[in-house]
Each structure stands twice: as structure tokens, then as C-alpha cells.
Length: 292
Image 1: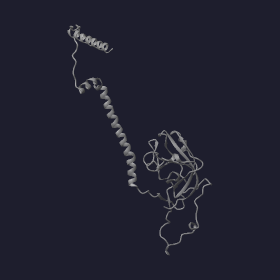
Image 2: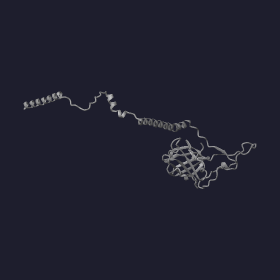
Image 3: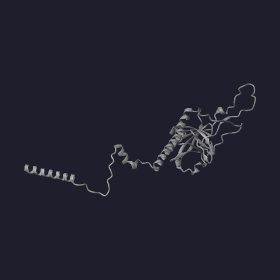
Image 4: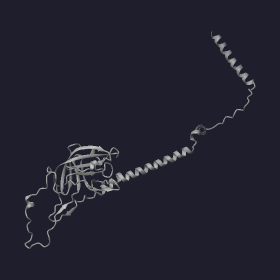
């Protein structure tokens, strides 16, 4: 058996040698076209050659690069505007921290009343004490010169809004219609000019930002029925109680209509500024504002 294996291996090797000798001695086959020479390239040159179709820049690539730069520049401008008009502006407002002005006082003519009588009998009227009814005592023996000084009363417009359940204590500024749209007070609640004063029966409407510039009404949606709201106006503090909250469309202006009973309407933007969140509260009490 070993002798047979050796002879088989020898014959196979001999066949391979004969084939090699034949290939060497045989003339090359004639071809009609000439083969192109093979180019020898380095690794980096071969990579560049293989990716030539991908690395080649056309006008489409130039447009895309230009568009990317424009988009990045626009995004930076928008972000910068938001940063300056939002957090930076809020920080400057808090840094300056101006002292809240005292309620504006106006002089009333003698014998006139700047506080009209309330039409709702359920609301307490301003009261008087025995000290108020006592005639003033003369400070001097000699008679006073000049006329009787006019009493000084606070302006009837709302000046302060307090909502304990959402930790809100903000000043109130009167706003007007400018270029066909209502102004929105910055860092304060806005009292819509022309709506009812708290001392009258009707609809007192306040509006405020929910996002930037103070965002005094950012938590307005957290108010639930039964929450108390306090509004200072004309030296009096009016207590309201939340009755309902709802979302309306900007063209549903009926929420600003007058009402037979005294109510307070708070309004701000919601749902990405597409709707208005409206909170309606009913008047339950009024008393003189506490002294600061």
C-alpha cells in the first residue's frame, strides 16, 4: 500500500511538471485588442480613485452648503433674539427691581362721591365708624383760613392682583387697543380699558402673558373652581372665587361682554397661542385694602 501511494503522488507531480512545460513553450494566444496596462497606485491614491464619483462636487453640493450656512445663521439670529427678548430681558427687569408705585391719588371735589353706590345688594357697602362720623376738632383757637381741603381718594382702576393658590402677586396696569389689537402688559396683569371697574357691577377683565416678559399668568391653568382671587382697586380689596375655566378662540369676544353681576375675567394665551384660556370668578366680598 505505501508503494502504491508513492507512485500515485509521483505521477501527479509529473503531470503538473508536463503542464507547466507546455504552458512555457506554447506561443501566446493572439488577440484582436491590446490589453490596457495596469496602473500601480498608492493606498491613498487608490482610495481617491475609487471614491472619485462620491467626492466630486457639483452645483447641487454648493447649493446645499450655502443653504446649510443660511439655516445655521438664521437659527443663531432667532436664538439670539429669543435670548435677549426673553431671559436677558427678564433678568434685567429683576435686576433693576423698581419699587412698585403707590396707587395714584386724585382729589375729589367737596360734596362729591368718587365711589358710586353698588347696585348688587349682596356686596357689602363701604362702612363708616363712629370716629369717621365725629366732627373734626379745631387744631387752633383762631379760625382757619382758606377753603375746606378736598378729600384724597385712590384711583378706581385695579392696581394689584393676588392669587394665593398659584403664588401670584403682581401689579396691574391699564391697557388699551392699539392698531386694532389689545396691548399686553409686561411684567404685570393688564386691565382692559373700558371693561367694568371692580366697584361697579359688570365684567372686569384682566389679561397677561403666559410665556415671556414676566409670564404672570403662566400658571393660570392650574386654577380650580373655588380658588380665591383678590384684586385691589380704589383703596378696596375685592375677593373673587373661581367659578369656571375654559378655552375659547380669539374671535369669541363675548367673554368681554358686560354682565349683570360683578365678575372677574382672567385671560391668557394657550395651545401655542391659537386659543385663549379664560378663568371666570364671581365677587364674594369686599373690604378696605390692608395698609402696606
